[in-house]
Image 1 (cartoon, one colour):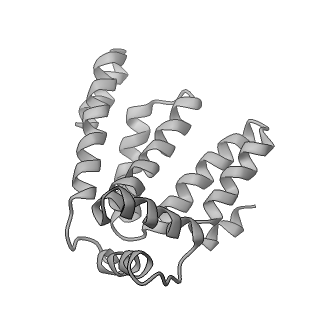
Image 2 (spheres, rainbow, N blue to C red; image 1 turned 30 degrees about the vertical axis):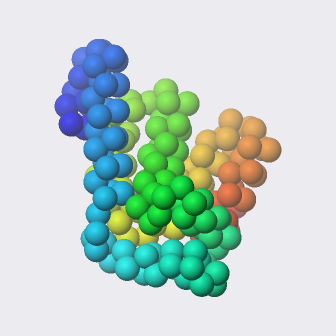
Image 3 (cartoon, rainbow, N blue to C red; image 1 turned 60 degrees about the horizontal axis):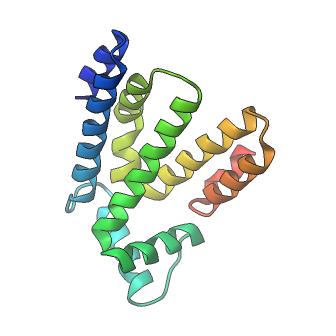
Length: 165
């Protein structure tokens, strides 16, 4: 579907391309949030979720703790998987749209190179990367306040974000 969206967008039919892109993104979100045991860190993140929401103990960054609590009160671990995948995809689409780039091709490229790893294996790293991309977008647009805000948010999900500034 993403490949079809790329071809349709290339030929100028933005409405159909947007429709195919939305359907593709919904399918990605559905698959990501309804998986069980898929991904190298799936059970680690499930354990972290249990530790945070049941035992009130945690050893991860504060932003991820908050996200776990939000998911817990909305509906559980699968909601956490959905929220993390949604935030990743939303950040990518946000930056691509703001830069007026070929959105379908950008999402296809992101999916091909990063999506599976960021949403099935290194979830916190994926969230950090998504927020760093948004921070960098605002940095290059010379909107320092928004850039710093999203940079701080990225640090709340993974300490590796410190190397980006």
